[in-house]
Image 1 (cartoon, rainbow, N blue to C red):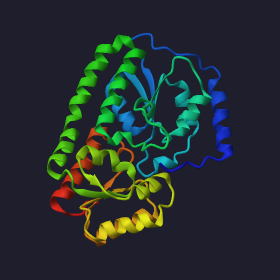
Image 2 (cartoon, rainbow, N blue to C red; image 1 turned 120 degrees about the vertical axis):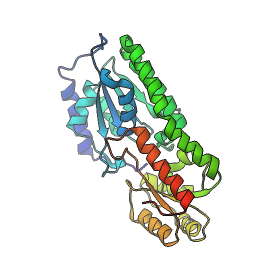
Image 3 (cartoon, rainbow, N blue to C red; image 1 turned 180 degrees about the vertical axis):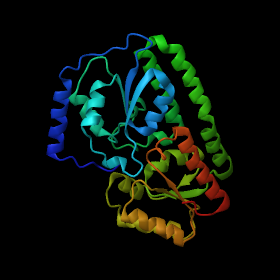
Length: 306
């Protein structure tokens, strides 16, 4: 994950915003089934899932959803601060991916507000690969916790939330079927990725991700990879060892662009993936399944999918 560069002034602004927003903001409880739970999701992949669970019983604000922006570089604003300050339920990815959200929560403490930190739920910490939404196993654990949290906030809507939870599980079946289809046909196939966004999904699909970890982790952290890892990566592409390059088009650097171009020159299929849902109005499962189908198509036809 790229390290965000917070200037001292930005931190001061967050603190001031928190103090201002605490004025006249009392504790809020959801007392009746008709009272909406105010939910803030730091990113739209978690926002899509909690929105499908909560339906008409929640008021949802998703903060990071711009398809043209690098989520690692997000900087908070007054709108986000106000949403967090008023929220009954906040969902963060954690593991350092959205530390700005943790700052906003600290700046506007309020009893009764529930927080789901996905990294904490999964037993992860800062420094671990934070792209948890690319793991179907982790997604299942998260939506189960979301359902439990919504019920705890509005017990009168237990049946409604449980019904929508079961509907969501059913609607995730197609993307899981695509994962299984890739695994059954291409398990063990050597592939590469420009950063560690694809690590969890490579494991789920049984693909053998051989790009140097020192390279992918450095790119994800916003650092320069070791020179020897670049050489190894280039050799993997030029020698024909890998059958596919997964390219994060939302986090682009001159180095990753050169790796992508090298893949094209060496006739290695390239499939683009993104950090956040694209288009932003798509559901999580439609977005994820579309990317997986592109991967399956590229592996099947040995063509470049851009």
